[in-house]
Image (cartoon, rainbow, N blue to C red; front, side):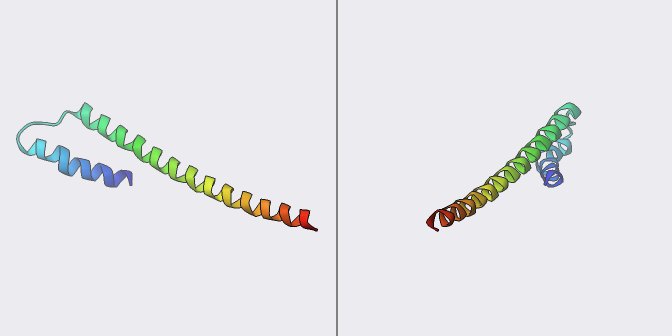
Length: 73
């Protein structure tokens, strides 16, 4: 995902600037790369967090069903 975002930004945002004769500043390119890297880490961590939260919720529902069946006996 990170490499795909870097390729898109480089191709459609930075490359046209270079073609017109202006040289894109290396500092800004590095900042874009760091920003996109942090964004990808944030998205991946959020997805894992939500997946684990869903798994815990399903486990809690199973646990509650087992407790209710124990009480009925």
